[in-house]
Amino acid sequence: MSWQSTLSWENAQKRAKILQQIRDFFAERNVLEVETPSLSQATVTDVHLEGLSCRYNFLSDSPINQAIPLYLQTSPEFHMKRLLASGYGCIFQIAKAFRHEAFGKYHNPEFTLLEWYRINFDHFDLMAEVGELLKTTLHCAEPIKKTYQELFIEYTALDPLTASRDDLLTVISRNNKLSDWLVNEDDNDILLQFIFCEIIEPVIGQNEPCFVYNFPSSQASLAKLCPDDNRVAQRFECYYQGIELVNGFNELTSHETQVQRFQEDNKKRAVLSLPEKVIDENFISALSHGLPQCAGVALGVDRLIMLALKIEHIEQVITFPIGSA
Image (cartoon, rainbow, N blue to C red; front, side, top):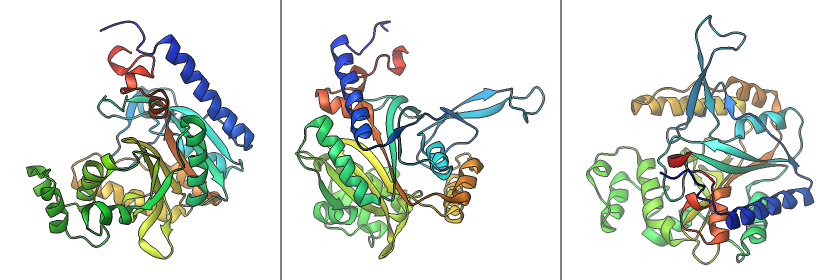
């Protein structure tokens, strides 16, 4: 283990320049930079996302001599939406986020996330703006857009919105990726995500960024459903040169629907023997007060910098990865 930084002085200067480009991009569009807490009294319910936590003794309503859990944010989303419900206009944030996932080529458990929200945008408006930011920072070609369904049909000859479990397993087997845990998997969403990650994701967005939109509604708990097809939701992701860069939504504004989706997450957690997560009541109260029509997106800054500098491992664009932090 070395005490020295894995980010060279040369690349640190290039990183700083990209961060300034991002801030200039939003300043030109009159989008305000904000800061929100890294710690929260609640965390996400998402079955596939785990936060990190710590203990704190000194809240006014804490039991005597008993610490309560606080959670490091997996993204600043809930706090930023509370700002929007409070009357803020369009906002962005460059924040530290924390996820309990394995350190690897594209992920450090503490990473930098760019998140922004645009009032009166839908997901198509926001995809266009994300594309402009990518062209500004990466000098890439004009992005393309395809639906989740179109990509599945193109690369697997299978419609993901009607496919049976047997259909999905057949595609996986045909691509020589079948294993025992997949054979025993009852959740079609898990099989769909496996096919997307292992078969589709590696081949899209090679020459230009590729936006994928209209994900199955079961994979988009924070997005509005598409009015013309409730099987899909107004969520998008963007892939470029093998890297998932972006996750965005035409944001759900109904607090009743949001509570229902969080409860469904916790039911799935129970089935998987995962701990139930407390629903963020401050966030739900903000939605109940009223969230304006908006679209929001999160972009992995470290991954963006990897692409801009043509670097192969995330540790080369951050100062101290988890192994030497």
